[in-house]
Length: 401
Image 1 (cartoon, rainbow, N blue to C red):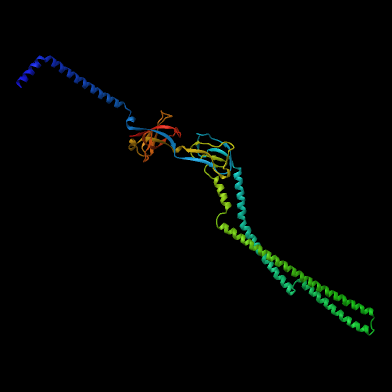
Image 2 (image 1 turned 60 degrees about the horizontal axis):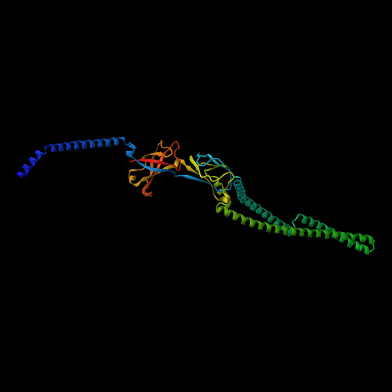
């Protein structure tokens, strides 16, 4: 050990200059390294200060503008297009006229159904009136039959009474003439009167007998007429009774039909009327049923026939611009940072200098694969008073971390 210590001491003395020079180099290197790391730290601090606050606190996601409500406008009744007032992409307001229609055929069909229904509705009162009239006629006919039967059986007919009275007088006159003839025959046989005088009394008896026979014949004719009238009244009664039975059956069927529900004509009329009662039909026009709409997919032109045989014909579509949303594709590693109702910033590709505000309205519980990565399609509701957003546009959506 003493020898090694002596050796090192002698070596240090002999290499003193080289040792001091090496020490100086080490000191300089240490100083340079200190300056380098200090400068690097300052650069990092400066760079950190220059990073945008948005870049530090936001998640950037690509998004596409879509919509949640769209109206399909179609016509399911016969009509003809007489004018198209809009073009695809036009903004429209509530009740704005879009397409003009000729509804002559449809209105004519409705008119026919109304007339048919009116006739149907009038059928019941008419049937009741007919039944009432028939019942009155039957009662009157039955009364006539009863009266005529009594007149026939008991001779109470005024004509018969007059004829019977005439018959009584004629028979009385005949009896008187016969009595006179008998008396004058005795006088003739006694030679008191000539044959000429007797013949006068014989002629009187013949005339009186003829008068009796005529009255009796008239009585028989009157009775025959009464019998024929009775027969005709009975035939008429049977006919009216048959009519009454048929009318009552028909009326019962009509009443049952109405009590069973609305008639088929009423159903058809209600159906056809409802076809023109849609909120996008006003008079002869198809109008917008959306307050803030965008027209797309117009498939008709002037002269197009719609609703042939009641089959719906597509006319156009109206997107509800108030239902526009931005579907932002957020990488799954950032999804935990995104919450419902949190504000977002939207920058359209079509207007990169403009920025819209919005909020998160849906964060799905499922991710999908796209281009080899997992994304979540977050729905964002934009605030777009200037209508910068259009369906199909793209945008960058910035979420807060």
